[in-house]
Amino acid sequence: MEQKKGRQVNKSMLIACCLAVAASAALAFAATKEGMVEYVGAQKNIFATGKAERIIHLSELAGKKNLFAIGPVEGLDGEITIYDSKPHISQVRGEDYHVDHSLNHGAIFLVWSDQEKWGNEIAVPETVRSYPDLQNFVVDQAKAAGIDTGKPFPFRLSGTPISINWHINVNRTEGQTITKPVFAKSKAAYLLKNEPVEIIGFYSENHHGVFISQYAPAIPPDSGKNNAIHIHLVSKNGKATGHIDDLSLGGGMSLRLPAA
Image: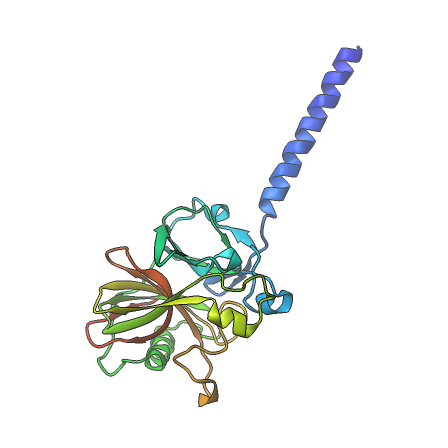
């Protein structure tokens, strides 16, 4: 009788443990869903806490199809770009950088979309050349396509820009509390010229300090204009990937927006 009771107790404990594990897995991160995107964490938390701690591990997104995501690696140790479910994680190592294709990384904040259906390619006119031009073109085309631009949405670009100024976060804090000046210097800058690329971006006018920076280097603070896009590149040869600060498009680029 005691053995039977003991087995029942052990079985109950096992069930309770399994339920606890399942619950913890389900609550591993609390994502916010708005419009066509989901996000977790916020850029402003870096400055509020002075730290660049992990809010999500990328493995928690394993198995998602048609996944497009961008964000910074925890500890200011790289840039995360997931393009159509393939990870491209760039990290500075010595005088160069390394690109890893695993999900074995944590993010300070992350924005993503499981977007399966995309509309037809939209030719980007040669008059759309600069970063602000691109931002305006994206929102205008989204409105024309019936997308609610009051909510965040993803977009894609493909082609061969004249140039892209981009960076990878690298920890140059030297143990200091992270302030905006410390954050600004913790970047390794790069220039890409006349290289075919895929670009994934997210547009929002209402998420500054979350997954959209208040200002981009291409939009001066005294311009009276706010940044509304966060864009990352993946070169077609797979060698370059990171956060885009500025660009010059030229002709032959195409835009794709989510299909209804």
